[in-house]
Length: 390
Image 1 (cartoon, one colour):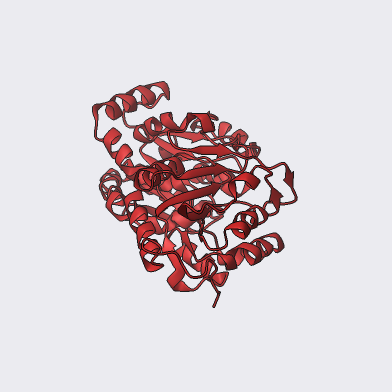
Image 2: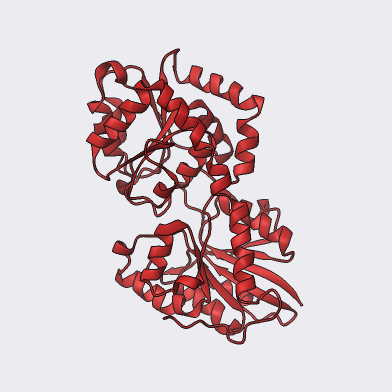
């Protein structure tokens, strides 16, 4: 009897597309189910018809909250398939929708694929209801790193049922571009377009414009940088969203050359990583922060807060700097050190490339297969599709 994966998600993103292609190659006949319309503030727009694997869109029509919503199209999908063993990967979707998948397929395997989170912000009413309904009906979870592990353990998942999802972009594609001739050409072209002259530095911030991204901290930090250093900086913010006040502040900082690109297709973003000298992410609310992975894969040092999940990829003063959240002073000092100490910056750039072997999608696939072996799902179906929480 063959095994197939059904993956449910509310978001189509490049790293997910990469992973689903890997799943489809390993387990033919798998299916991706999109339960929401794409987020307009993201730098990618995909349609199910563009996929090179099976994908259907069943958008929600009734939304009570982020965790209680209804997608009528799931009715036909959530049915028992006696000819195959189905592994259901439940992404960041509504708990109500997830229950509609679990109930008619109670002897299938169910796993949460979770981006991570922080235990201190776990116990909100809507979130509690979601995990009460959904989490205790799953046999395990895949979540990135230690922050994700702490988050899932705070919800009662036993340690042995938590697997690392190695949240990552396609590092092989990044490396191929980075080491090719095109990256050097794109770097020179973009730096010329941005007015980056010899001796100048291009600081990049890839971020949606949301309040918890704390771009106001970045604006204040840049103002605290000494005038002579600030005049050598070109700051590029890439991203869109409703919280635009920090952009107005950045535009008025004396001596700073500031650029904003609201909507760059994801395929083009790698060019700007190549053109930059280092990356700054002042966010205090990213449950992961994939821009950290992408920057390190391009050999760019990263300055980020300790508050985000991806902070565990940054080793202080080795491949970047970790700073406290909401601390423009510390953020400013880190920017200044990267801008003024070229040998340090070059050493950090070299160290950043270690991310390719330490954190990638191939490690995630190995974890996925290990999860199946642990449950003996690759040889026989489980006796009970539900798990019990310790």
